[in-house]
Length: 286
Image 1 (cartoon, rainbow, N blue to C red):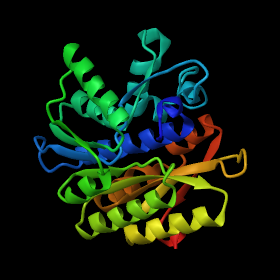
Image 2 (image 1 turned 120 degrees about the vertical axis):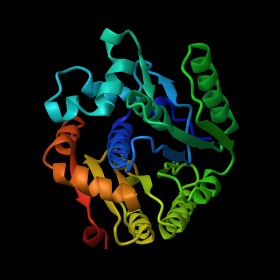
Image 3 (image 1 turned 30 degrees about the horizontal axis):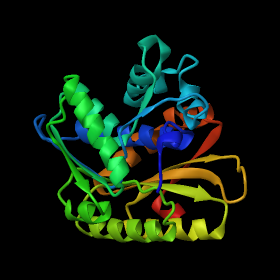
Image 4 (image 1 turned 60 degrees about the horizontal axis):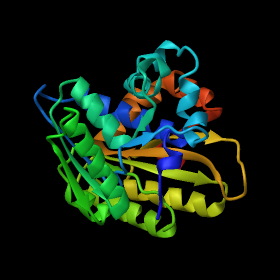
């Protein structure tokens, strides 16, 4: 069973969550009416909050953003603001917040109504997710729009064709090709329905990885675009990068907000993580 606790706040998580909040921020600002809710779906939700223990992956990811003053394009981003509130020593807390939790925190800070359908296939992780919701409730933090779904997140995600954003975020381990096949199939279904989709994917230095990513972009359609973080390869078969693919309304946000800022926040963030940014356009994905 995959357990994200030791990897929470890694450089891949930082990239994922920075782009995710950029997209959600763009969707919020692009609403026709201020009262329009954001309907968010996540296929593999995880627990939502993770203790930042010494020696874990966050030290080389989120930790790199806490120890020095940030330039303006990063400092003013909602991800950095929420990261500091959860992890900076001056705030007296030491925990990393996952995707759905960050989305909820941001939408609450903007006083935006929302619903969340959170899926979790692991019984153990699902129990931790529910424990986080209960702990927050006891502390006065309400999650009135959240529903938790046990079991196959792909099936649940595929039914939410009217959602503002569906985030497909499987671990790709230990299922490997199985997760790639499911993500590709679910993305195709949602794209055909006109739903905005955001997909996190890993990058390894082999032809199999290239073929999987190409198939994913093909399923995502002609308007799909992505932003990738690449870093120096480590052990054979290890990650050399990760990407966030966007389709539909999410792709328009990425194109308008992130591609235009290729020499700004994204590049600065990649440099802080000792990596480099690559923008993937429909033509580049062919």
